[in-house]
Length: 480
Image 1 (tube, rainbow, N blue to C red):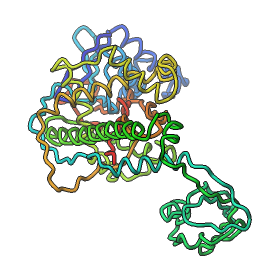
Image 2 (tube, rainbow, N blue to C red):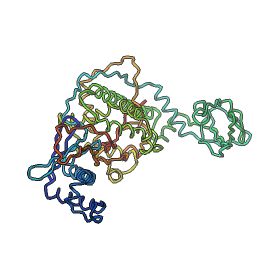
Image 3 (cartoon, rainbow, N blue to C red):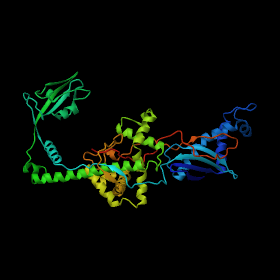
Image 4 (tube, rainbow, N blue to C red):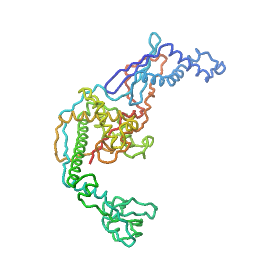
C-alpha cells in the first residue's frame, strides 16, 4: 500500500491510497466468495454458481458490495499511514485501475488550515484600562474584616437587624438555605427568585422561629447571629500577618494593583485576539465542521454538564452556526498563533513552563511534582496557553489602543475561568472536553461502472460530518 496527501487549498486535502494488485484481487475475491453464498442463480444450486457467471450477471452489485466493505478500510489505513488529522468526515471520490493492476482510491477531506497569510499590525483596540482607587482598598479591608468577624448567636428574644446573619428553612421543600447577611443584595441573591419581592424589612424585626412570607412560599428563621467585626488596628493587623495597619494596607494595595494589571492584560489580550481574528477573517479559512464542533463544545461548557453531545443533535443548525460565527475570531487566533510563533522564533522554555507550574501548584496548595502528576495529560495545554500569551505580547506593541466610548460586546457563551482571575480555580480549567472524534469513515460517492475510471474533479464538499477532535480548550470570556 502506498499513500499520498495532496493539499488543494488551505483546508481541502486529497488522499490517494494505492492498493497493489495482489491485495486488491485478494479483497475482491473475499467479497465475491461471500456474495456467491447468498445468491441463487437459475440452473445452479444456491452458492454453487460459477464465479464467472456471477460476475457477468451481478457485476454492479458485487462492485457496490466491494466498495461498501473495503473503501472505509482503505481510508482508515491511509489516514494512519499519513498521520492525517481530518476535521470532517471524508468523502470517497473515485478509483482507478492502473496498467499494472494496482488500484488507486481517491478521497477528499478537510483539515485545519495551513499555508495561510496573516496580518497583525495596526489592530484597532478600543479599551479603557481599570485603574486603582482608594475605594478598592476600602472595600478589600471591609471584606477582610467581615471574613474575620465574630458570630455571636442570638437568644430567642433578640430581634433581627440589618447586617445580622440569618439562616432560613424553606418550609415547602424543607431545605436549609445558605446563611446570609441581612442586606438587600444578599436577600435578592438567596430569596428573590421567581419574581418574588422580599425586602430587608420582611426579615428585620423577626426573632428565631419567625416566618418570612414570600407569596406562596414561607421561610422559617432557624438561626441568627450578631456580626462583630474586629477593629482596624495594629492588633488586628498582627492577627492578619502584618505588624501595623499601615503595612497591612500597603500589602493589600500592592495585591490590588497586581490584580488590576493582570485583569487589564487579560481583557486587552482578549480584545487583541478578537481584533486579529476579525482582521484575518478573509485570510484564514476555518472548516465549517470545525466551527460547529467548537460551538457545541462551548454550549456544553456553558451548561456545565447538563447538556451532552447527543442532546446537541436536536439543536437547529442555524443556532449552532450563530454561536460559531460569534466565536470565529477566537478560532482564527487559535489556528494562527502557533504559526506566528514559528515565523518569529517565539517559544516557551522549560524554565518558563516550570515557573507557571509552580504558580498553579501554589494555587492548588500542592507541590509542583504533585501538580505535574495530577495534570500530566494537560501540560501541553498549559504550554500552549503560555505560548499564546507570549505571541500576544509580541503583537501588543503593533496595536493601536483607544479609549473611545464604544460599548464592547462580549463574545457569546462564557466558558471557564482564566489565568489571573482572583478566585478558586477549578479542575475543569485544565480538562479537555471529550468529543466524538470518529472522522475515519468516508462518505461513499461513486458511479458504478464496469470499469471505474478516475474522475477529473475529486475535491467534493463533505456532506456527512462528525465533530473534529478538539485541539484545546480556550476561554473567550471578558473578565469584569
